[in-house]
Length: 519
Ligand code: PLP
Image (cartoon, rainbow, N blue to C red; front, side, top):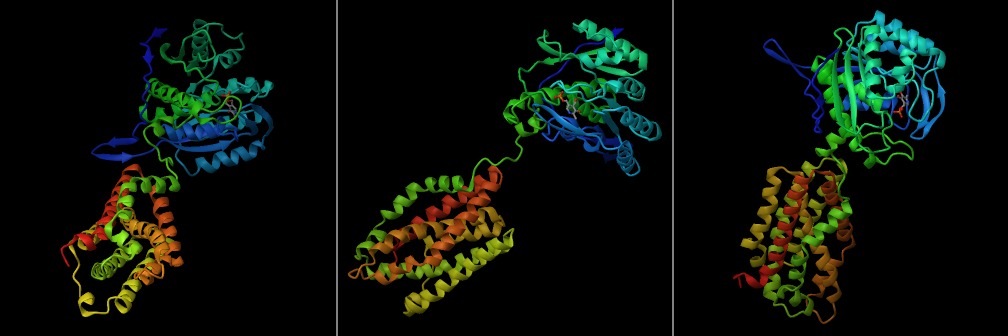
């Protein structure tokens, strides 16, 4: 036996890019991998695990079911095995339609199933076959009839790689279970030679080793390639064997030979076992985390609820909000001591602002991703322009007020909104539009309490008590914060900046009547 260098498995796995270069052109073909096996409704083993492992290692997974197994992380309850004619129907449905780049075979359960799979393998064109000789689960349940072991041995020569654990290796040879790694290697070598196949001997069941040791034995050449990687201390290893063999089958297509496929698959498996405890699935031996590596790279996961987003944004502008309450303009409105001239100037600027605010709202409606949001922003655009018209009709009746020019402050606020609208980012635009609802409503809810008989601004202050505006404000907060919770971190951060900038513009807008040299 030739012993090749130990393939120490590293801990960072990158799914191979299934881009294949052909003469002068680049063809992309994702490996199409068929898993044949039993089910596990808890998703950790059998074809459920196979499909996840295939996908996680860069393949397109298909699955043909041999047996329906009622099981969870604690064990098997019962089993339903459909007639083998139905299995053949499933197999033929795939092979008459899809090119199969690799096959992984798992639980076969009985002689009929083994015979049907064998016949189909012989009569079908397909890629390399990995056979995981599933016999007894870690929970101690039989997944292969006792009298089917001989039939399974008969299937071995149709496989290219067989992946037994220590007890399965012994059972295939009809020998006692090996007690140490040397014994395992000896059995693996004899099995590989007897059936002219490659055998991946797995040392996971040998508890005396500090590392997880495996070895690839090539029956044709007698070479042995050892693999070792860190043993991870966890009870959550349900479906590890199924997952490894599916990953190897998938990676064999892209790698072109067994040793690199196994090295990469073990690397991926180590990462997946490392993430197992965090999944917290079931009370027994839980599943591994097939997409752990991908998730570590930042898979989409909801990190914030809309309520949390709204609260954090509101907190971000606390200083601005207190600043608004402290403005001489706001204090003058509540005490009734504000000059009429400053008040009129404010109303004229408000009307000018509303005209462009309405345009920005209309643009949000045009960009909205859903009909409900489109309708909401459109009705808000209508509300803003209707208020502007009303201001002119009822409050800005003199020519001077009617024809006022926008101040620098009004222009700055409006420019922020219209520039954001022009950039075409719905996310940032709706964030910029929010303070005009939220701050205006918040300030108004305090101002309205000062609409007393002796306050000359009482008729104006009462306009802040409009229930329709309160409802619109709540909806705007809901729409924007839900959107912000759904987008990626970078977009959410740009939204938050747009929101804070607009809140600052609100403060300056309220400050302007008493700070601008217009009077
Ligand atoms: N269930 C099915 C359908 C399987 O194919 C396997 C694979 O070996 C198992 C259960 C056992 O999984 P484990 O022994 O890893 O818990």
